[in-house]
Length: 164
Image 1 (cartoon, helix red, strand yellow):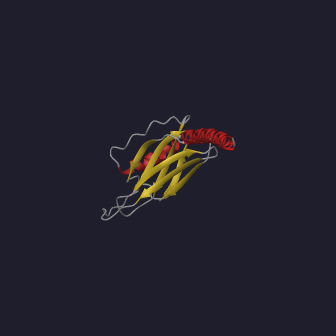
Image 2 (tube, rainbow, N blue to C red):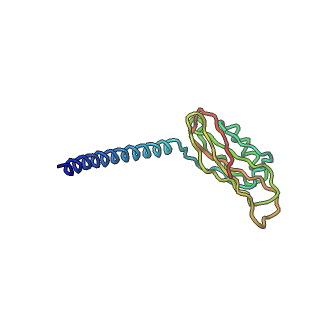
Image 3 (cartoon, rainbow, N blue to C red):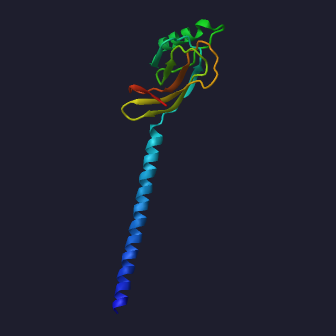
């Protein structure tokens, strides 16, 4: 009788333990799925408008272009040595804005600007990007690497974060 009671108690404990483990697992998966869903919701889609080594913009800077006159000024610089010039992209500034990353003047070819992600964290738009530098032999030529991307318009500040 003593062995049967011990067996019954152990069986009940094992059953309770296995049920509680299954409940935790479901909760953990739900939390993970929620975190993934939130991560997807914060990612901002973008479209590359211009990615080139010759923008004729000699200063290193990052800009947010929110109106047509600023976009025309940048394209005037880009087109100052191009014949024929590049057409001005169609941007609806009521719904969209343009982000620009200018590396300034470089003494060789081979620089590349890559966007890792553009995220909305609720307080600001964060542009995570990296710069690939030339490896090995590179043409000795003056360049001004530039990347312009189109994103949906937000009434939030934009922060540019350069990574490795």
